[in-house]
Each structure stands twice: as C-alpha cells, then as structure tokens.
Amino acid sequence: RFSVSWVAPDDLLSVSWVGKLLDCFLCCQEEFRAIVRAQKTQVLRPPLDRMVSDYFDCSVKALDVCNAIRDGIEQIRQWQKLLEIVVYALGNQRSIGEGQFRRARKALADLAIGMLDDKDSNASIANRNRSFGRNTGCKDHHHSHSHGYSHSSGSGYHHRSLGHF
Image (cartoon, rainbow, N blue to C red):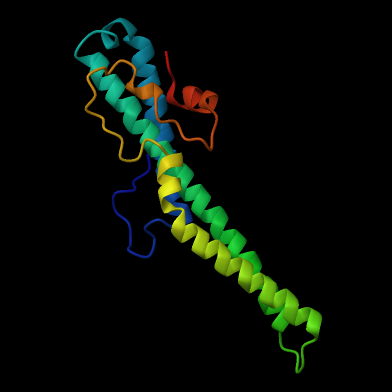
C-alpha cells in the first residue's frame, strides 16, 4: 500500500507524489472491480447502484485531474525548451550574431504568446475536462458516470480503467 496522506510541503504535487497518487488510484480501481464482479447482483440494486454511480463519477473526475496534471507538465516542458533556446543563443559569448539574436527573440516571443494563451485558456481547460464543476446531484444516477470523460483520452481507455460491467 502507498500512503499519500502525509507529505512534506516541498513534495506535494511533485512528480513522485503524483505517481504514488496514481498508483493508489489504480489499486482502488482494481479492488473496486473485484467487488463489483463478486457482488454484481447486489451492486445493481438501490441504494448501492447510486453509490457505484457516484464512485464512477468521482473516478472520472480523478482521471481528469491526472490529465490536467499531464497537460501542465507537457506545457512546462515546452516552455523549458524555448528557454533553453534562449540560453543557448545568448550563451557565454562575448558578442552574439544577428541569427542568434533572432532565435532568442523568437523563442521569447513564442514563450510569451504561450503563457498569455495559457492564461486566457483556463476556461477552455475546464471545458475540456468536463467533469470539473459538474453537478453530481442529478436525478438519474444510473448513467451519470458515462458523461464527462476527458477529451484528451478516448472513452475506451476510461471504460477499461473504470472497469464498467
């Protein structure tokens, strides 16, 4: 078993912590699948059917968080590449040429545009990860887990990872 409940402030949301969180999530999913398979007739009747639906809804939201983290890490990597271009172009040379200056300027412009686009697109990220902020108090709990899948992964992935029966 993994424990993600206690974490040093510097390690919170670190790559290793997120990895442990994902491992815990997948362990819970496997255990839940085993319970559902063993007690399928019980799980399909009230009130357990609503609880299962709520669990799937929370699972989709957790996967959306993982997708958002992955997207954020990828964006940081892109920004890092642009900054490396600037550092390399403007390096420790006494004088820089026109080409190096243009490369550095273009990389900085691309970085600024990317950061401004990111700032403006926070609403679109919430829209892409549709289960964020979704009203879970809907009357039809039987199908609530089938809505809100992230656009960044196919629904087949979610069906396999959530263990639909």
